[in-house]
Length: 304
Image 1 (cartoon, one colour):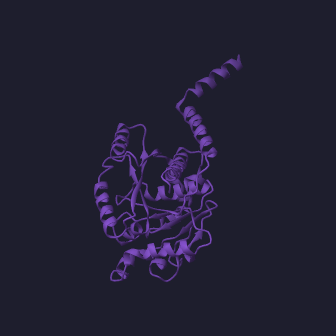
Image 2: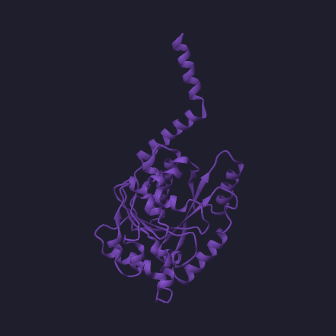
Image 3: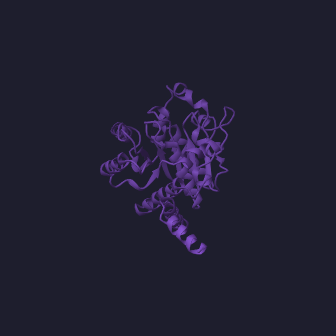
């Protein structure tokens, strides 16, 4: 009698949304574990940008970087935000005594001298940002070629380092100032996170106009290559509408992977971790792993 009741309970559990989600996550992780990622032909340099705050910009930069590193690739995150949130998530000290992007942009040191190893993952590195960056725009306002400082630093680094990274992700502040312009002048690709909430596309048209201006005046090789949907809540009709709207506007560059609004994703930075190491089996980690795989495979298909 007990055996029959136990089986009934098991069948009931298997029919619950939680059980179905666990089963689906198990299958998704198995596919992720089986995936072998191609190395790019040359270092792919991304800037992760959106002047609208709170869209998951830094979260996406560090988690995609960690996801790629977890699959055996070498990845460098350059933190250009004076708040240093990317540095925090990668467990890299970034108090005022630490050398980082400020000293690189001021021409005081070479980029390679500021690179630190992240304890999060083998193959994952970071150039930290400190609060000193907040005054940089005034300090170099009259400097010659001030928009190209990061690009020159990255070029020298890639030409001289013994082990160039497969990917570089530049995390920008949520503004269109000189730091972001430096990132766009240095990058080849832009990854734009768009949150699945009200006014998701507000400001994106302005962003596209600025990108076109940067392409004309500073960096003709810059390309908006990737759009990532973030903070998706499957319980709301609005989220579905935003997904459809973004896919309609950016059909060829929007990733199939969608990042859910998830507790594990938001709590990981408080532990100085990425969600990839904080809880790899969570839906947020799985989604970022899938996004990273998609970025690598799409790049290979386009010959990057």
